[in-house]
Length: 164
Image (tube, rainbow, N blue to C red; front, side, top):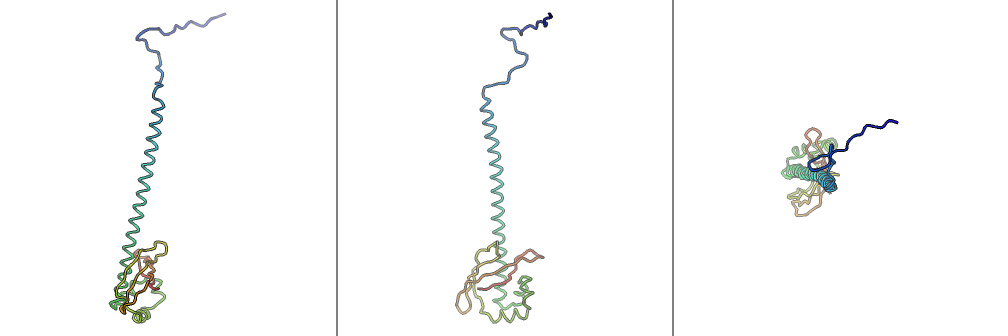
């Protein structure tokens, strides 16, 4: 019977190190907890900033569209009020211009009461409708609805119809 050669045990005593040090055991749970906490914090921060950025872009876009709608409606109503019917006709959307000739538009609008003052409400981004509180030259008031379209060439709002 053969025996395996004898391997001596590492020496005992002060100043002697084992051949492979063991990984530290104390504080392991703390390090994992901090790692998970920091990771979750970073994810929430990134997602929160992304959400805030999207909301900011949406609000800015809505305000910009409201300003563009106000300009389109004001330009149209002001042109009609001072009798610049050709200018008002050119501010109409393509569909409205296809449905009515400039002469027919001029005759129709000239026969309507003149809007002396108006207040433009908030644009509905889904329907393109904008409420307009109008005061006519005879002193009467009306709640009108302005429907807008977008010019395919310029991307600006155009009035398609204003009515009750």
